[in-house]
Structures are given as C-alpha cells and as structure tokens.
Amino acid sequence: MDFSRIADTALPRRAAGRPLYTQVRELLTRQISSGDLRPGEALPSEFRIAEALGVSQGTVRKALDAMASERLVARRQGRGTFVTEQTPEDIHFRFFPVFDAEGHRILPLSIDVRVRRMAATHAARARLGLRAGGQIWELTRTRTLADGRAFMTEKIALPTRLFPRLDRLGETGKISNALYDMFQKTFGVTVLRVEDTVCAARAGMETGRALVIDPDTPILAIERVAFAPDGKAVEWRSSRGLLAGMVYRASAGAKDDDNA
Image (cartoon, rainbow, N blue to C red; front, side, top):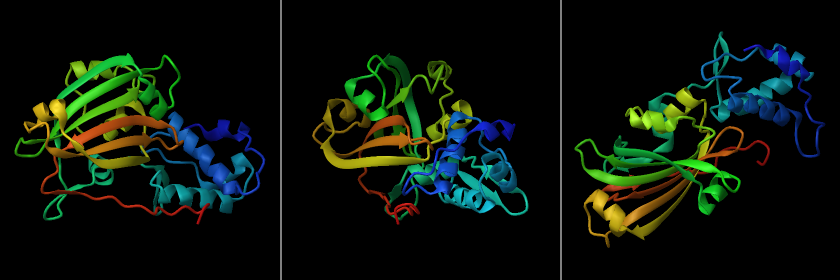
C-alpha cells in the first residue's frame, strides 16, 4: 500500500471523551473497510503511521493494540503488523457456535443455494441501513450435517453494491459454503462482529418441507446482523434450525477500553 496519501488525512480535533488513539484506530479501520488495506497486507511501521498522522508512536501502538484485540490486525514477532486474513476455519469457529451433545463443533454443508436480486423490503432496509429503493441479493440455502440430514434453513439479505455479480457466482455454483470467507476474499468485505437474536418458534410449512419435519415442530429461530469493521451492517440473516441434540453457545462481555 502507498501509505503516503494518508499524510494528507487530517484527524478531527480531539473531542471530549474521545482519546486520540481511538481516532487513529477509526481511520485505520476505514482503510481496511474501504479495501485500501487488504487482508494479509502489512501495515506501515508505527513510526511511519505516527509521522504521517502527526501523533506519537505510543498513540499508534495503543490503536494497533485495540485493533489486534478485535482481530482486525495480527502482530507477528519480528515481521510487523498485518491485516488479519481469516481462514474458513477461523470464521467458522467464531461465527457458527453450534455444538453436538459431546461439545464438538458442528461443521455444516450447504445445499439448494439460490440467489436472486430484488428490491429491499422495509425490514431489510432497516437492518442494513439502506435507502428507499435499495437493492439486495436474497440468498437462500439449506444446511446439512455430514450424514446429509438437513437441520437448518437460511435466508440472507446482502446489499448489491457490496457484492457485485454475486448472481454469477450462484449460476456457476461457486458460492462458498463459508460465506464470510468468500465475502473477504472475493469482495473485500470483512465481517468483524455479529449480533444474534434467538428465540423458539414453530417450523411452519416452508421450513417443514425443507427439513422434512411437521410444520408444528418447535425450532430455533436466529436472526443475525453482521457488521464490517467500520460498524456498517453488511448482512441480515434469518436461520431456522432443528437443533435437537445440539447446543447453540454464545458469549458476551468483549473488552472495550473506551467504556470499561
């Protein structure tokens, strides 16, 4: 990356309650979100960043420490700091917290993957921050276990502007089972965090047909909004799963230096 252009980027004046390192972190995070800093790419040295922004190396170091704790960057001893390049395994273990009765991770596969372009519904616009008239890709798929048994259906809304030509991947069968890995490597969209809402529900006719269960069967309904490093929503997902004999495990309480 040619980092010289960031020298012309003026940090906003320090606002009350907003440390300078937070502003540096936000600026570097925007560089990642925009694709100026790509997955796996080395960041300039702390000295170069500090010199370009007119701040101390200590301020830059604290910003990078915060980004490392969020897994946005990775520090490698003797080599420098790199934008995190997530592997499919990393993504799966972070964002699919379903385990079997023995505590082993469930590794789902995808079948019946379909993509269509459509006008965003009011609900999709609200979740994804889209304007009236905004367009989305609606991606649907069924998740199966290793033995081929279907256990979850998913309906996913994605802003078309972030995922150009996604339909072509669908037509050629090249939509990855690990979507977040594909988001990063194919479209430069990194998912940093997700917010899941979980409740019990009735399967209904559509889910019942896909999972070959009675429509009145109790299931777990999971609604997810996924966010990029800059805090913008990039995915709205509705999952409906028959998780009998499985466990959905969530954790909370991530460290936040600004609000601790």
